[in-house]
Length: 357
Image (cartoon, rainbow, N blue to C red):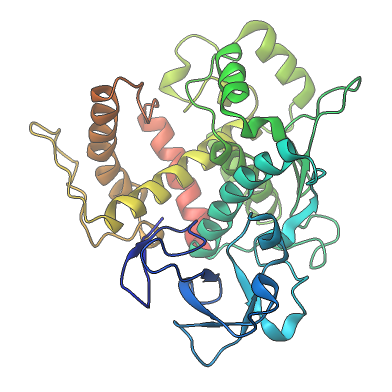
């Protein structure tokens, strides 16, 4: 994620900021121009539900997304679209949300919305299609954020023909860490959930419906094998010996769909983290770095990388630095994955899919 600057005072801003902590101007994200702008209120009595003037586009009038009322969104919509009850370009994919009068649900929803907005930003930067249910009633994207109901089975996070379900308990660090440890995973975050499940969504669009099945099966395996049986076998037997040579994670060994989704998530991790590093002007080249890797360049644009080799050459020294810094603070590795040649080849396939768009 890149950094932004306040148009009023020049202070540095983060993507999720609702207001500038330096000059106290309210902020709104203009998705059509990818700009986080300081705002001037044009209707003091209406407050956040009223009209606002972006300093980055003073000729425009905007309103906050309807989810701003829950302190869950800082994106704005054109004033002509409605009277403040309109959802933004990210929140419009939310079909089912929990009862937000419940304070626990509301706190979880706010964390989920941040991860969702981060995802939609990345997909837009990559130029990927994001059809909603109105554009594609059968396969368009929609999110169901479900709260557990006492006495009923817990909702399972997953994807089915464009519908992405997320158990909102995953927004709780303690619960998510417990699940991570129980399932033997090295990494589990809200962003990771979104990036994995959106990988399943794009398998449908770019592979199944994009005439790439044969190429994909040659790398990831035959997706026609029984999915339920494959998962049952995985949870009973675990990953096969030596899986690290061919897969990014143990879970990726369960089925070719999961291998693709896990690899897709890694691709988004890499793209977004490199963008963040370049936004801070980082240049990383550890001493003794292996031949074939390059220092991170401050002007490198991961969204326009022509080859995965170019991206990986910058990613490896960055992850070495990230993990070393985390260990210095007494934490585990921020990036606990190994990119084997086979995994890099799979990442290259995904990069080529994205570049075709």
